[in-house]
Image 1 (cartoon, rainbow, N blue to C red):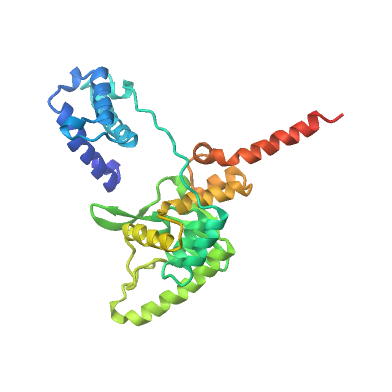
Image 2: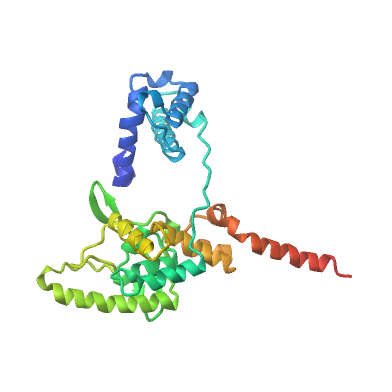
Length: 304
């Protein structure tokens, strides 16, 4: 039901149904669907068909297919159209988490040096200094930022819905959060605010006031896709290779943990739904702390 989901989520569901579910199961009566059929469908999506030129799909895409089908069948079950939800009984492909790349402290400093004077320096410094998601950073309004108090609040995210940039809600309730700003970020934002004022004066009537912290040269929100291309050009010019803006968030959280910031604090800064999510993604970084804990207990237990 369209009123129960966000427009971009609905668009994604429709795409999955059109390209993956209806072609395979559209002619099958719902009540006759079996778990074996769903398992076979998911398996075929993972393996593909090289002879027919059909490429295998990623685990995450196949899991989305199963989820959409499961939601549809759950509704059908509520309406007494099927006796059970066979998608929910099917076997989901196993999701393996990759650790992801993170900038080392030396690479982070190299990046900061390369960014000096860049028009979007403050954007990248903010993402690296706070762990904000790309959409959250691009969705920041000046009303969300308190430079005197050295904090910002995450209330929105900039996203694309049906081809249009919109300022929407954050991903989850935990994503709505306050973040303390490092001095480096505060100074970068102060410089950026002055530069934006100069751009506003230079643009004159062409300026379109949006209230966004990070804008185009005429004041409009920045397309997230353009940020990907721009950031890659910066990292390559700095000799760091090709990096994605999302890796700034991963780097920020990884560097916090590596410096001994408690995982519950990092989870709060990240806006994760739970500490478990933080541990699942970044737990490998905490090996030194775990070893330090073991050493501390060993010192107590082995003392005479």
